[in-house]
Image (cartoon, rainbow, N blue to C red):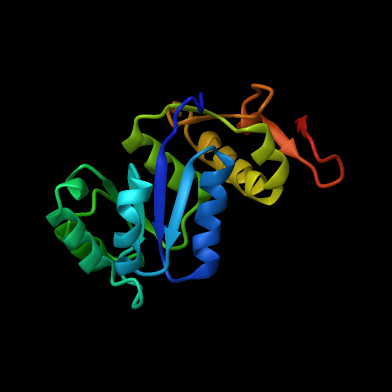
Length: 186
């Protein structure tokens, strides 16, 4: 339960998407670094030592496919997990896989799906949202709660990462309201 200190690096030239990824991961307790371009990211790798990298494989400024290939060529890069963001088509996915990506997610991802992929690779099965992040990133918590609830309600045998609020209640069973500012039972 968020006893992990896992670092994730985000590499994307789209500011809104980078912020969306940042908010989802920050609200769940990850240490995060980010870069706009692949070359900038290489300069940060020794300092940030990410366990996992989320990279836009097809953004023109990022040059994500080249970044993944180059990363896989370095010894340190062999140990890092790479999740490639891509447009939803099989050709993009195939190219990212050939470059060395470990997993893939569409650029217009659902917040919980991104978190599920990351947690699966980092072997995390339960996260308690830190109190300070719960208060400071309310919109991100609400977006994550909606996405999490949808994922759980679709699958009777749900075995995904469990998300808990600071008080230990499961996020899927709660409704966040704008006026109260706190979680309420449905």
